[in-house]
Length: 173
Image (cartoon, rainbow, N blue to C red; front, side):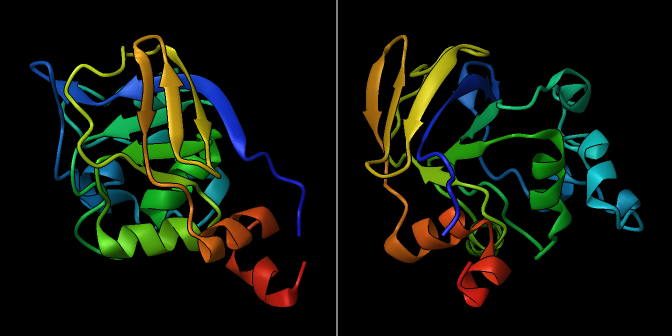
């Protein structure tokens, strides 16, 4: 297994509109289908959230180590791997949401992108661009307004993350 951090600290992009977390952000909003011909993962980051109203400049302003927070059903829609890889290209270290689309969640796990579920997270729990710390082992997310309990990574998801991805996990690395 690789030596990857299980406690992450970084700046949090709170995806909200009118004071409420945005829910049902689908894979086309995360990574527009107009850019599917891009196959070099390192070039995918520039298109992240290019189709999400109010966050079109995310890719230009995001920095390695940042994290993203959204409402329910993040990543719903297609099985578009680009919607995971664009975050990895930018160095986004985790995505937090109340819940994730099933296919997106599987793609994130397989790609070693930590996805932390925060069911029942109240509105206004985190300030936009504030610093947070996420413990992947316990699911605890700490910020200026106090800790919030999320779901820890499952055993297999944690093992895949620690290995650096599904292929590395399968090779026993």
